[in-house]
Amino acid sequence: MQWWYFFVLTGPVLYAASAARGAARTALKTRHRRKLALIEARREERLALEAADRPPAPVCGCEHHLAKHDKQGTCHETVPTAVAWDADHAPVRYEAQRCNCQQYVGPQPLSQVYAEDLTDLA
Image (tube, rainbow, N blue to C red; front, side):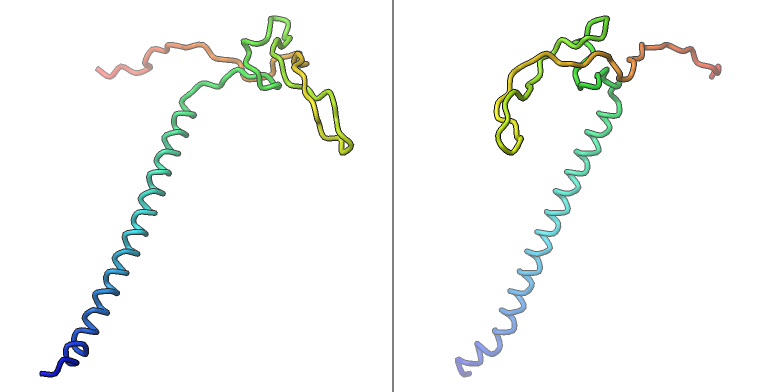
């Protein structure tokens, strides 16, 4: 038997093995990407469910919490306010000043309510 028969007969086998290895690698990469996307979707779903389960935060129009406001509605939080501008009217310097908000306009927090069952299951 000639030595070149070895290369002629084993060439297609080696090519098929290489093609199969490439296909397997591509399939594993695709599976990995899909698995990561599924994990991310589950995380986002869990975060959305947690956010939906929380009661609404009493937040004013100035986005400060209700605890930062007194009974008259005056906000006692400090905010950075622009005090100097450049030639293009872009703020250059900021100083902390009191928030100008005057009234709480967010949702009213609900108290916990206990209700008896309407039907008797016995």
